[in-house]
Image 1: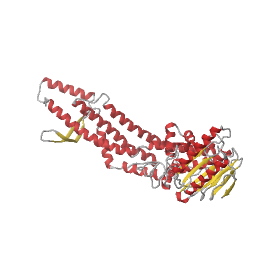
Image 2: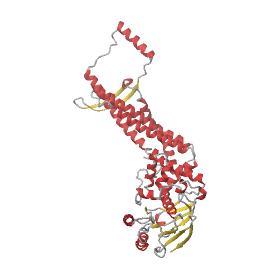
Image 3: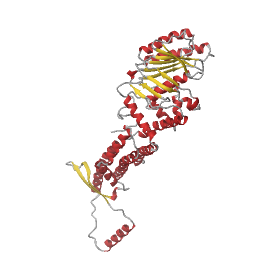
Image 4: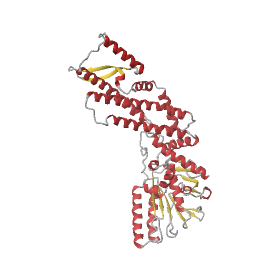
Amino acid sequence: MKFSLLYKDAERSAEAGEKEILPVSEKTLYDLSIDRTVKELSRDSVGCEYVLRVLREPLVNAEDIRYRQDILLDLIRLPGLFDELKDIFKNYDTMLSDWSEMSMGVYSYGLPMTDKGVLDAAYDNLRITAAFLRRTAGCFDAVYDAVEKYDVRSDGLSGIKAFCRRMADSRALETVSDICSLFQRENYSSYRFEIAADTDDAFMIRSAEFTKVEQLQAHGAVSQVKRLIGAMRLQAGSAQNEGTDLGEYHARFSRELLKEAMYGLYTVMSSAAGNLYDVFSGISDELRFYEAALGYVLRLKRSGTPMCMPEILPPEAGVWRAEGIYDPRLLLDGTGGESVAVNDVDLSGLCGAVIRGENSTGKTCALRAVGTAQLFAQAGLPLCAAKAEISICSGVFTQFSSAEKELEAFDRAGRFEGEVRDIAEIMDALTPHSLVLLNESFQTTSYAEGASGMENILEAIGACESRFLFVTHMPEHVLKAPKNSAVLYFGGDHKITEEKRC
């Protein structure tokens, strides 16, 4: 069994599911400024890259998205829980690295060549693995104690709590811990072993296993004096307790027998340790995502701007509706919460919208707000909006161009060719229920030429049962919005001043 705080079914990969979705490209994350947003919200570069990797693999099932949403809501509602989980699973990760490092240290001077050296190495591996297994088993108590203090409601955290309770009460796990606790001495000479062996006709060992392991008492200063006095008395007279030398052959045979038994127990312990550890492996990394998410929520709360957990609908519903939506980059770039322009956007039932307005009226910010909301919604994150209902997309694509007026002729031609190539790649990858975001594309050529090609592209996107948003400066008499689309007009206050349905 394996638990995950990101995926309801931890055994499948993030992309797997009943429906396929194309991974989001790094270019799309860059165009939407999501990479910069995540960088500011992450503690370090490792955390940043992990969060971006999660965002590049949107969830495609509403139930999976709600699973992630509910866990985040628990962590928001229960201050202190995240920090406890973070500490526990950070230590959980170090256990594996410690085990690996100590196991490698057994052979740090090369493979032992003598039979005694091999026996020493076998015992060291057994002792190290027993310690790791015992620590791993003890983590179930630690996780349960941490989660049990809080009123968790999410399926993810409740499931972990119930599982850890069962493991803590398990007699089998208690037996494993008891066996592991035996092998804590530095040397196998501190034990008395009974071993059952299976040999062939040539008296060669085929298998061996422990039937009894007994720890000898540690020899303190007092016991050492007693042993010394006892040895002196033997030397003084009686020789009846002298030991019998069985010979080197018997010593080698005994060491071989002990090594086989140790190796057999080590194999079982190593397998058990791997299986137990795998239950919570990776959760420490997953908490990087929630750490960034909690930082994001905190920034929104401090700004006083709207924030909501969206209602997620299946792709076939074709719903895209948000009240008071805005681009999170406006907050992270230092713009005050009160001055952030919010808009109501409803694209439900439409094949898309053409966004018009003068320069610096907030058209591109609106485009980014919609794209970011889509990816955040399918990552289980809150949206920068007062209320939202969003259908799942099968893919999110962007083509952002900067149509500067001060371009040389050859620059214009090169830019146009690049835009054509980018959009051709999008059309080749397009699947039903995709979202395509175009920013000032085909505007480095003449408006008439660009509009002719863009009209065909927008109609083709709609024909694929997908949705587009196209920011443009092309005049309305040159570029006609497709049927079943809308035209959104932005004014100087960065707000939608008019909406026209086509």
